[in-house]
Image 1 (cartoon, rainbow, N blue to C red):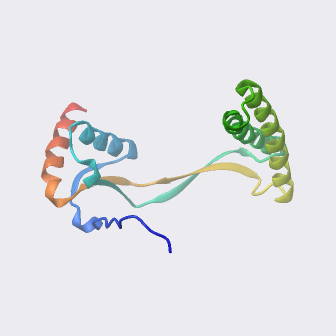
Image 2 (cartoon, one colour):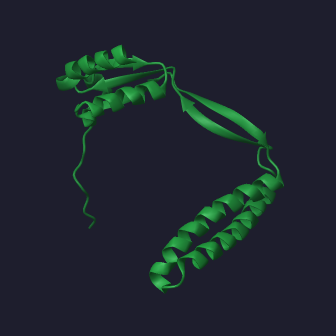
Length: 160
């Protein structure tokens, strides 16, 4: 049978009072980073996003050339990874193996990107990026340390 690690039971959101509310994820992240930098046990805190929505930003039209470029770029990174790992097993020159891995990765990645584009007939016709965004972000903490978090975040807000 498989052995598993210890089960971690996280407190429910209802058991964790709100210690700060922010309008952007970056502000909430900075608040938690401030807590961490001041010795607060951040493993007892969390960030809860409310009123989530999916925002899709259209980056441009889908084209065969864009698919080839994206595939080649991904292939280059895969080639770099293989080029860094191969010297561990072959003892060859790491620079030559990395350059060769990059070249083969770009070639096969470009081919894969083009085949993927053709088989999906251009997909949706455009390329986009999707982001999950909330209207507000609450920083929460376990009830036992919530007052400490509030006091620290009050100092953080005075500095901002």
